[in-house]
Amino acid sequence: MKHKMIKFIPLMLAALMFVGCSTTEQKAEDSPAPVSETPDKMDHSMQGEDAATSGAEAARGWTGHPLDDPAKLTSTRMIHFDFDRSEIRPEYQAIVVAHGEYLARHSSQTVTIEGHCDERGTREYNIALGERRANAVKRLLMAQGATPGQITTVSYGEEQPLERASNEVAWAQNRRAVFEY
Amino acid sequence: MIKKLLLLVVLLGSQITHGAPLTIEITESEIGALPIAVVPFGWQGTGQGPSEDIAAIIDADLKRSGRFKTMPSKDMIAFPHTGANVDFRDWRVLGMESLVVGQVKPNGVGGYIVRFQLFDVFKGEQLTGYSIPTTARDLRATAHHISDLIYEKLTGQRGAFATRVAYITSVVQTKGKRKIALQVADADGYHPQTIVTSTEPLMSPAWSPDGLKLAYVSFEKGRPSIFIQEVYTGKRQRVASFKGINGAPAWSPDGRKLALTLSKDGNPDIFILDLARRTLQPLTRHYAIDTEPSWSPDGKHIVWTSDRGGRPQIYRIPSGGGKAERITFEGKYNARASYSPDGKLITMVTQIGGEFRISVLDLASSQLQVLSDGSLDESPSFAPNGSMVIYATKVKGQAELAAVSVDGHVKQRLALQVGDVREPAWAPYSQ
Image (tube, rainbow over all chains, first blue to last red; front, side, top):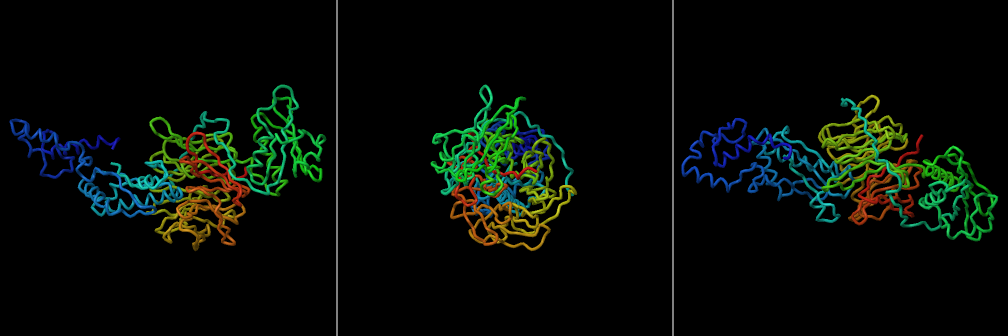
């Protein structure tokens, strides 16, 4: 996310509107948010008691980027794999599907999928295995309607472990695919 | 088809360091090795004498090879510097079969002349002897050269002491960031020189057959590209930067082609890049993983890793294309094969139970021998004379290098004092 905040400003504003917390003169034309959430629907706004109440509720809601909403599956950006395997495990299917649905709804949103491996096995084979993992994620994203142009893949093999220890726990952590928005 | 070659110059910088950040420890020694005494060399000049102990370097080289059992100088009863002063009875009593004596003298212009003689103790005969002019800077190289001459005279096989090794280091910097470096050092770990540094992964260094260039993979733009760099000038070219994987570069024996792994067409396959013509030929076409190519010394075949049979195994194919044949059948994981200099053996990584170890496969007999005893051993590379294999291992969480004689009898560790060291590539003889 770090270098891409600028791109997200329209999205973030759209998100604020979605929560219904504030009025704004920003147009939603760049926003991929649904039509029903256009600003004109919200111009009862900040005047009067109701509007004030509405604002208080919004403060408890998620006001960050929707992808970061901890209540949503898309806030999970990492999934894990079995040794020398690239199938997406059942417990991670819903997470990848949620990312795919988000990308399908937001066609200007792009993502890089990083594939990683544990330290066992050879380095270049692991580069290939990491790519296979990233591609498995990419295929499931596309099955939800995301387009190839939205998705970049890169494999780091075993070169960038999360955990440096040489044990099953660390290896399980390191066999991963990461969504980088 | 190939992207425009990008000519870049990498500054060698001031990272050239001296001393030995790689410390060598012999962990197992061969019984029945040839007993040899290397007597401390004499100094024929005034003042302090040279900064390097020539005899100690020769002694360490010979011991490291596993073919020799050297005598500690504290056990010697005489310290001759020339053949005229040798009493062979002294050395027969001590059970020595061979004896090396020598001396160093100034050449009058700031350098030295190193003189040595090798004797057969039983016959009382000189086997070889030379006077070698050198400089203060090249004293270690001269000592390695003498080791090569002694080794060849006594074993009949060319020595590989005056050769070099490339490897990747990874050192934690401030804030947990790692500095990755590609280094080149003498085969005994001395004189390490950094030729590339990056905060992103560097991988798969491969020497050109003339020993003048290294091909390697760099993730410096957040994705992998293959570079070829001149080791002495630091000049480099980017030769592959396709979509997806650009990995596992391997030079053809004539130095004109590079076998490499590209996934630009959807999944990893082996391609042959003609470096002069800049043309690219696919060699494998399979939906499985195909990677880690290596040429036979005669250039006729390529071995590589494929999981087309379900698990990674080694396959062989004519380098001009043809029918692929599987050549490993023992074990469920065999990967990253490379040929011995005589083409008779391949060394690779073999999974034994849950452990990944270095093995050698005899291509004629299909005999597999496991050489290493670690659990995460990888990246084996033959010495240019085929006598040893250097590889990467992990000891107590630290990544370090190890070397093993090709019969598995002698093992040694080469540890970096700080940080991890991995992916050793033993340089060919310089031409």
